[in-house]
Length: 178
Image (cartoon, rainbow, N blue to C red; front, side):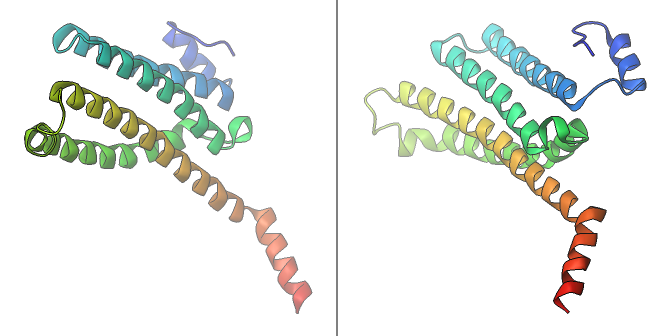
């Protein structure tokens, strides 16, 4: 199957005849993550902030998104795995929501607490705030894909332990031990 950049009808057709492999699906997942990141950072660039830090943060998040999605694909079994997108997005929601709440709490603490507990410590508090924000954005992005990958690995372990082959093997081992 070819990657259909623009032709949604072709994607639907390929999906309907089950002509989309797990390897094809991960291409769509990476492209989607990258395009969401691009849209977010373009909006920030146009409306809020134009700085080297924003460009650097954007590049870091793009790299984390691409590699993170690929690592999640590998954790799901790679080309031999099944239902990558279903598994990825179902796990991504609770992981993402928890990290959203954590990021929000940290952001509020930084906004109100920074002048008190960090602002007077550095010669250039604005630079320190920018560097800390960049570090936190990158850390949250890494944590997002890391936690999804951990859960996908756990899911695959559970699926393997529930397989008929594994159950038969476990029964046979128990019978041999008796």
